[in-house]
Image (cartoon, rainbow, N blue to C red; front, side, top):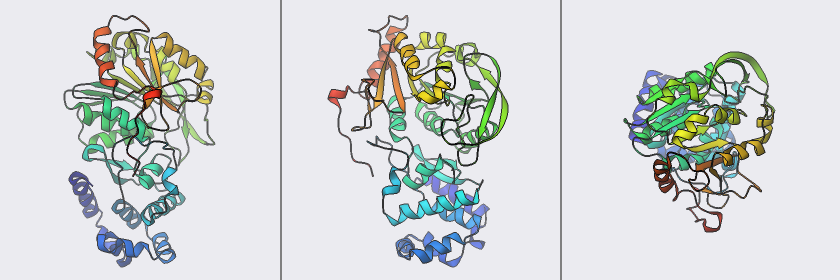
Length: 386
């Protein structure tokens, strides 16, 4: 764990006066020398953890956090860590389950990349792979880490709790910029909290849903446990709706802060089926800057909003972009054969496919991204996951 995270956590525990609410048995688990022996108690310790009051449970949860190194993870999927039999991993899953059962709405502090800290709400989809396995979408985060350099600019469209925004802001430095768009009031508050927690002055937040037109729309709000799956269309998974929220919509071509940028290097787009609309509303921005794109590609979600996987791919090809999947064998982007692709894809403008006015600056981006994006017949093995 980083020194900054430990200092932040200690401050939190002191503020909560955790010494008064943690039982003697849990105190033992907080001591490194006694942690393994305490976890070996199995069912007895499980019962003790289940009987903990909420504050004690969350304090224990913070003391068991781990963060996997920021590197590709070949074959990663949502619940991959839960197959691990280590006592610590199983204890974290137990704690996550209890938080889910209690429907807790209090966050814990969790270490994040570059010695940063995030608020993590145990019990929902987002927190499960992070808390239990130490990472979420590691290949995508490794790609962003490899691509973004000092002074670059990224748009985080569908920022959710701000995990990509925090990483990107630290990558690009004080002279770089991150513009984060999140329409849901619930997720917006969490995004703002994570940006403030890390004192990131280079992040600008927009409480808007990015689409292909200016105006307003009804955002369907997902239930507890599935926060972040809010959508302007229909839910793809078995998720219940808790209500709707009228939100402001925008298209990037008409957002002054975007139009006035001097550069744009990466657009990350995860908007539950509105990805094609985002691209349509950013035609001028994309033609001007030729940014790399990291976006979700889920056919059913796209169909709910009047598009499809094929239409979105064709749109990217028409713009002169090459499409890359995250390889199952390397975890790195590899040129797509369109037979089978990862849920998230990378698209990079290629000057040989379409002649643009910004070829020189785009060539610089291609040179930067070439070591990351490898052809399928030249993939490199990476270190095995932790």
